[in-house]
Length: 113
Length: 112
Image (cartoon, rainbow over all chains, first blue to last red; front, side, top):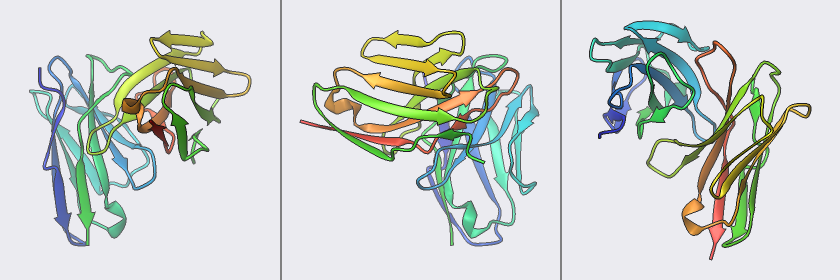
């Protein structure tokens, strides 16, 4: 049983560019959350998708957007990249309807130069 | 606004001894608390949780204690093993809120 998979594992972009990160949830999970983990900090909640809609959003600007597909996979898009967007982006899935016990992927390490 | 705080960035403990990790929170609306463990190049994995209606939850070598009046929880690992060397995150949530608020993590090193 595959867990949460994320792609790519590493990415290097320059300021002003746009990036798309992808996530496939664990089998049987329908809820996907995205977190940003900056160096030396804990993960910060970006948003959660359920039934193909953004159910809740954290304190992130509109440059951060997402999408959930009918197969429950999800994308995170970041526009107009800033140096401060450099971080590990974690995708997490959970049981139907949402559950506090999140299953995390290994993350995408984004570096903005 | 950091609502969950782990004030000890690191902890070193000898194999076989007890590891005690501490976590404080400021939001009295939090009613569910979790500990996650993270190895390098891997995502965090769920370790143990506790509801606010309890003050202790035990799972094998791991025990979480919750002191609501002090807004404090701790994770005890007994006995500590080399495989326990990792970063441990404390997290909290509240009813009808789908996000987890995480602390900054404590790096545990278990010495042989």
